[in-house]
Length: 463
Image (cartoon, rainbow, N blue to C red; front, top):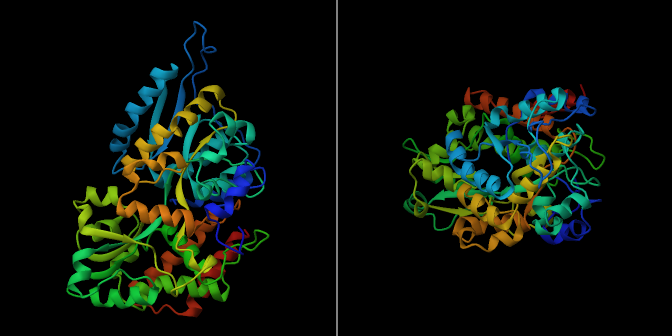
């Protein structure tokens, strides 16, 4: 990860236009301790989940099947099946290739992928959290999207540069291509802010804390956080770290978790509960989107989340009841990396390199990243199309998505695209989870206790 400036569309365009032989860096979501095996898996086989029977297109033999692991993007597994099945049928009708779909929950997806890289038993095509791209790239199990392969799906120039920057380690071809793009925004309850005399959503953290204090009381809280979720914790730590001038990995890729700036960033996040008291103690245990429900049901007035519209609707909240603003920064007028207010969140689409149906897999990726499918699927999931041409649809010009699109284009930065990134999410995210638990239990969270936990996480990275 570069530390000199934010990677924006303008910043990354030049490199992506040369099709990524010297490019890529740095959502959304759950990692497990099993990721410790990543660095050891560099020589493992990938997976070929398609049928072993079939012939070339145009022959009398039935085309091979593809197996596709989709991540759980909607309100439920069944919702995803309902969304994706008609699209897969369209693909089958167009190509003659049947796609066997499995929607995998986020809390087991990474473990499933790691097991597949070591066993050789898994899908042909799969969704991955974009923050895992470099970690999974290090297993050597995924197809590299070099210039030749990108050309088969229309070229790298089709994708938003910030999304393409979160597809693998710098200097290597992407390990996957962007499928759904997300960014964090500050969701706020319009009525609750108005009733508290707050005219505008907060733009700085001091303003957020001041607003949160006014909004806390009588069983309501100013802000909902997902303190029991290591991945959410790691995402916020990285963004706050940028705002304090810090990256959790140095220029050579070595971990730097416990510097004064890192400690300050993590403590600021913990203090929403521990010091400022604008988040409920119960938030320390939230790990399965409970904070979204609290916001949707009026228990909390503000929420920091990735493209939450679909989830809020599922909890009965109407779109005119909330607004979306950029995540705050430390001070008005912040520039460069101090102005970063979201990680580049999203889902990438990958192919296992030794699939027995590479031709079908490439056709499937081209189909899923086509302008038509990008418009349809991202609109359904409340995400932003990473394919630039697909953003012309009015569905992506709603007030909330305008904010998220602008954030992705101008003030987001990828998480570290290093082989140990997933391990970082687990270790630092868990350290923050433990600090939230301390605060909820009445134990004081200090600069020293934060540094102690982060130092321990850094030591564990070396094991």
